[in-house]
Length: 168
Image 1 (cartoon, helix red, strand yellow):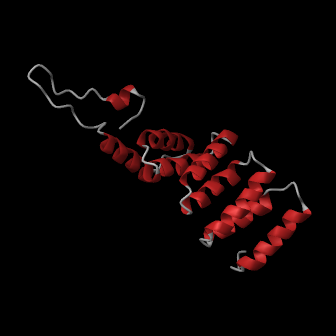
Image 2: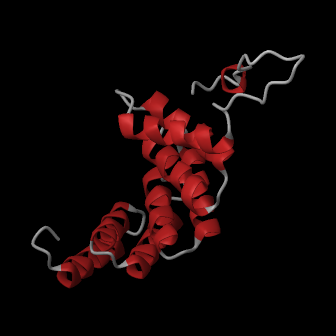
Image 3: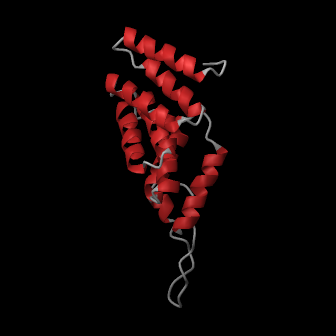
């Protein structure tokens, strides 16, 4: 696998999977190898085998979602990411991946924000790039925009984001 011999590595991983029918790890590794090689259909097949063996594997479900997203199967990817989070709600990478799916592919910024925020809580040091994405979503949603002033209103920003526990 590390030498780039994808076909040989896949055959060996399939053999290990056949020898140990309860293990999902050989198929996770096969799926990761195919993802790295941008062979998304093969990755999806391998990761589905991993999930069949261990439906509660957050890792297998997360990477199955990655393969599905790359294949344009956005609703399947959403279901896989949700399964990963059901298996382990503290799995930061699944929160990041579902946030990206909601943000860029499904156009659901509210959902994206929830998962970006959760990701930031889970990583040891908040990611400045993700913080920028969060800020950009707030701007797109109008959270940072001041309401138009009228003669009877002040121009104070009511900061709805702060009321919802979200920091702009």
